[in-house]
Image (tube, rainbow, N blue to C red; front, side, top):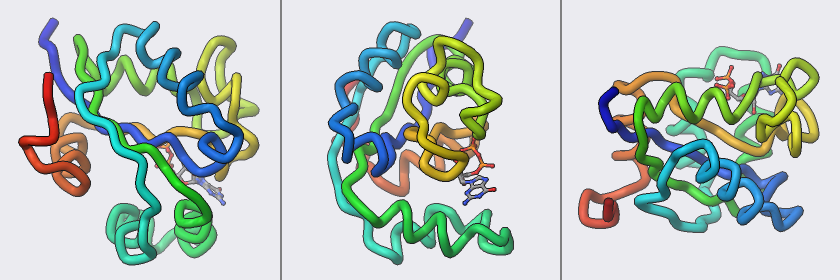
Amino acid sequence: MAVTRTFSIIKPDATRRNLTGAVTAMLEEAGLRVVASKRIHMTREQAEGFYAVHKERPFFGELVAFMISGPVVVQVLEGEDAVKRNRDVMGATNPGDAAEGTIRKSFAESIEANSVHGSDSDENAGIEIGFFFKPEEIVG
Ligand code: GDP
């Protein structure tokens, strides 16, 4: 299977509870390698741009407010079939539906404050990585 990259965010509910290391450990245990990482406080413009695909959804305003409520850690993850591997360890969007052993089952507070973001396709991974990282910031 091909080694690919995906984009991850450790969301404000997780950084607030000092879970950056715990979440990253689960990503690593799942076979993903952190090849870029930075802690940032997103601006409203960044959050609105990043989640533009959800603009029409009723929770868009709340989601943007949540994502700028505290620092996040944006990461590029590398591994075999990285997008799927990451989605599998993240678990379902709603932590009530997430499987045992997933990040969201272990840590998420709610369907919104669900601790992590992960790209849903190789194409979106490329777009999302480019939104936050310059090529020279990614060191595999
Ligand atoms: P994901 O790919 O599993 O992150 O899920 P989606 O792409 O469907 O949604 C993006 C993000 O929006 C989720 O991770 C949640 O933080 C948030 N979200 C999704 N559904 C809801 C909802 O019904 N209410 C609220 N407030 N936030 C939601």
